Amino acid sequence: MIKRPYCLVNRPICAGGLPVNCWQLIEKGDAFLNKRGDKVFVYGVKSVENETLVIVDEKTNEKYTLTSDHDCRNFNVYWKSDDEFERNKS
Figure (cartoon, helix red, strand yellow):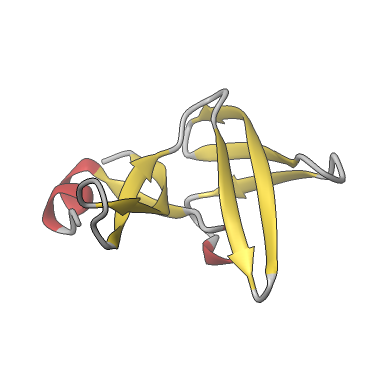
């Protein structure tokens, strides 16, 4: 079963509600955030194909290739199959 990339995002439950962590599918053309310590990194998604994700740091233009075979948590990327996603939906 093919795995797809997701990131964790904080969203309010409703207007004025407390934020909760939600999974968001990462697709070509998206941008997503990654917070490490007191720094926030913004990555633009260049491509998503065959369990490979190519992203670019929006500030430095440094390019990264992430695959489902490697731990990508440092980038806030988690690879999940559709079955895993449905079981762990937040």
